[in-house]
Image (cartoon, rainbow, N blue to C red):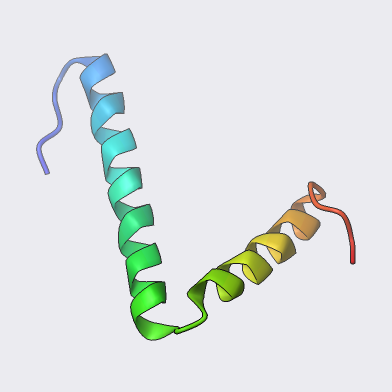
Amino acid sequence: MYLSTTPDNRWDDVRSELCDVAVTALMALRTLTPDAREVFAEHLAKVGRRAGTAPRP
């Protein structure tokens, strides 16, 4: 990966890499799990509860 020496460009590079990681992870989840949407939603709810940002069931 090429990182620019300009601070704004470095943050653009970081944001782009984070998006690539997120897309790759979601594609892997979908490939390995037929019910990926439900698995992800359940996990996101658990993370939200741990972080105190989601209502408890």
